[in-house]
Length: 113
Image (tube, rainbow, N blue to C red):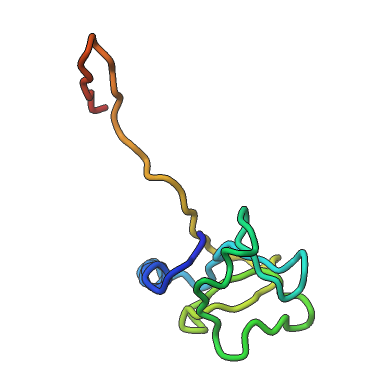
């Protein structure tokens, strides 16, 4: 997920609390250049429009924290975390469309499957 607003971040926090997720990966990293965070699959320019770092984060603790997460222990504020840790994750994509659209002559009919 590319989180670029407080509304989106709060939605994910509510979802994580509801699912009782302990550690959740958010899809950003600074593994390629320490301190330059980027969303996976996007440019540097998109990171930083909105952030929700916990106090004193990111800190690259033990020089081993290159992936973005939030956790129940940190009230779901952003934290850099070791990429090797286990956690849940969010995926962001286009909505899934249900049904099949079939063309018959000049009209379209929707058949719900």
